[in-house]
Image: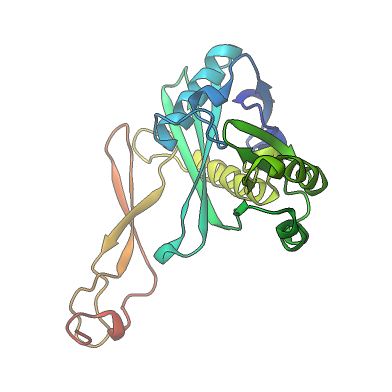
Length: 263
């Protein structure tokens, strides 16, 4: 088995094990670096890199700290969902091979139920706490005070005590080991990473040759003019610049999406 180092302090190793075992990889957690120094979900430390930069940095640190040729780093983010509806959880997994000089970044995302409440009285908890999904832990904030990884029962006691001194904020704890929904998305990202690692560039044979650049211009089924609908995806090798287009099997766009037929 190929030993692969994963820099994490929030129990993510089991989330990658099954998907990457298909590559003959054994994932080992790496310690010795506080990943919260690169930014934390609870906001104690602000983030100063993009999610992709942070995942790459963690992957490089994993390889360096472990002495392994291959390192993996992860980074999650939460943003407004499509059309501003809901919350979108995106998870990145970056894998670097120091000896061979390549890096591959996988992505998965889905809507999640990250929630936050401003509480002024304990009675509000009677309607909030029964809605918390099984396994989801909570955090409580009040000014500079912060308690994390609380069960609903623990959050209830904490809020009741702190409310005597003013309003508190109750939120989902979004660290991976505290959020079952996020764990699911990380598993999807691990599967995407496996697929990308198996997709080799036809020219230089490095991994990560993945079709993800949309190609606009799918012709209208009625008038034949190009539309904004994608006609396929393009894979671009970041090492030798080889490109290949993967066109959709559906050759025409619905006229409803045509600026000529449906202006």
